[in-house]
Amino acid sequence: MINPEMNKLVEVLLEGGHAAALSEARRLRTAGMASERIVTEGLEAAMQRLDDKCTVESFNLLEIMLVGRAVSAVVNELYPEGVPPEQGRDTFVIATLEGDVHDLGKNITKMVLIGKGYRVVDLGKDCPVEALVNAAEREHAHAVLVSGLITPVIPQVRKVRSALVERGLGGIRVVAGGAALKQSSAEALNVDYVAETAFDGARYLDSLVVHKAEGAA
Amino acid sequence: MNSLERIKAAISFAPVDRTPAVPQLFGHAAALASVALGDYLRDGGLLARCQIEALEHYGHDVVFAFMDLCVETEAVGSILRYRDNQYPDVASYVLAPSSSVSALAVPDPTVAGRMPELLRAAGILRRELDDTVLVAGCVAGPMTLTTQLLGIETALYLAADDPVRFEKILDFSASVAIRYGTAQIEAGVHLPIVFDPSASPAVVPPQFFRELLLPRLQRVFASFRQAGALANWLNIAGPTETTLPYYPEAGADIANFDYYVEPQRAQQLLPHICLDGNLKSLLFVEASPDEVTAAASRLVAAFADRGGFLLSSGCEIPPEAKPENIAAMVAACRGG
Image 1 (cartoon, helix red, strand yellow):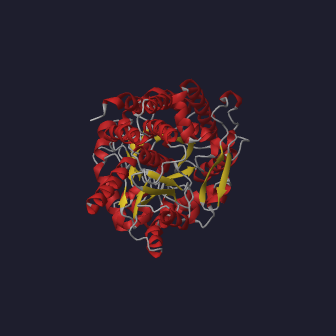
Image 2: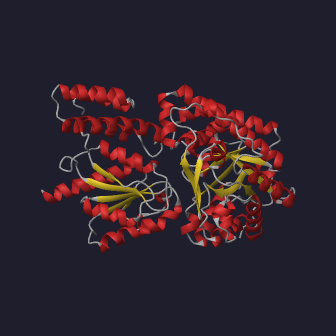
C-alpha cells in the first residue's frame, strides 16, 4: 500500500520522468518530509511496482533505465554526498570483473539496489578481483555482486570466493548476473546465487537482509 | 547434397539429407588455428584461411565473413580499443549526445576502416568454396549500430528524450547496413546476416521493436533481396518470443532463436520461416561432448517432422569453446 502523499512521486518515477520526479521530491522535502521517508516510502514503493511488472519474460533495459535514472536523480538530490552508511539498508560492492568491459547490466543492478534503499559501491568495469576484495573489506560489504556479459570473464568470477576467504571475509555473499553468467550455475561459478535479472538479484539480497534481521532479533 | 544445397532446401522446407549444421563460429576459428584474435579481426586473408580451416576441421555447412559488431562504428569514426584475445570495444563514440547525425557520412565499404578487409575475406571464401558451402556475411542491425555510435545508455536515453533525433540516427544506421551488406553481396557472400542484439526484448520493449525497428529492418532486407541475397537472415539473441512474430513482416526468411525460447514455441510463432538455434553458448565451453550431443539430438528430433531448421547455437559460440563440443554438435546432425 503506497502512502497517499507519495502517489505523485511513485507515478512520475514509474513513467521515467526524471525532471518531474526531482521536482516532486523537492516539493516533499520543502513540505517537511524526511529524506529517509522519501526513499523508503516513495522510491522503494516505485521499485517494488517495477519489480512486480518486470518478470523474466518482460524485462527490458529501457524501461528500467528510465525509472532508474529518475530514482538516481532523486537520491542525488536527497544525498548529494552519497547515501550515508547508517542510512543505507546494507552495503554492497558491485563490479564488472577484469576481462569484461560491458557494464550496462551492472549499472542497471546498481540503480535497482539504490532504489531499494541500499548503499552500493560501484567499482566500474574491467575490475581486478583484488580490488573487489579490498573494497568489500573497506566498505564492510554484506555481499559482492559481479556482472558478466562475455564468457571469458568466468574464470575471474570463480576466483572471487576464495579471494574473500583468504582475506577472512568468507561470510560475504557472492552474487553473479549478466548474459554469460546466468547460463551457468552457482555451483559452477563458485558463488552463492546467480541472478536471472537485476530484480531477481535484489530479491535474493532482500532475503539476506531479512535473515540477518531475524537472526539479530 | 552439398552444404549450400542442404541449407537452401532447409530454407524452403524441402527434404534434406541431414539437418544443416550452422555453428556460429567467429573468433573461435582464430582460436582453433592458434591465431591471435586481434590479428584475425584485422586481416581478411587470415580470417578467410581460419574459417576454411575450421570448416575442414568440423565439416559444418557455413563459413562466416564476420569480424565483430564494431566494424561499422569504427568505419563511421568511433575509436576502438583492441586487445590481443578479445573482441574490441569502443573507446570513443563518434556521436556525442548533442551532436548531429547529419554531420556523418555513410562509409564507403571499399575504403573505410576494416570494411575492405572484410570484403576481401568474403571474396576469398566465395572463390575457394565456390557454391558448395554457404558464405554468410554479417552486418550490425540498425538498433545495434545506433547503440554503437552513441553508447548503449546514451542511445536508450535519447530514444526516450529526443525520439525525432533518435530516429534520424536509426535511419542513418539502416543506410550503413544497406551499403555495407550490399557491398558484401557484391564481394561474394550469399547473404549478409543482420545481427541486432540491441533489438532484443531484453533491451527494448516489443512496442519499440514494432514501431521503430521493424520499418528499418524492412528497408534493409528489401535492399538485400534486391541486391541478390539468397535469403534474409535475422539474428537477435535473448528472449525474443514477443518479437519473433514480426520477423516475416520484416522480410526475414531465416530466424535465429536463443535458448530462452522453446523450440515448440518458436515453431508455433513462425510456422513458415526457417529457424536456427538454440543451443546455449556456454554449453560449448562448460559441458561435456555427451551433454552437447544430447542437447543437439533433442533439437534435431524436435524439428524432424517440420523441417525448416538449421542446428545452431542461440548466440555466438565463444572463442574459447572446446573443439570436441563443436564436433559433437556437428556429429549430432549426422545422427552420430
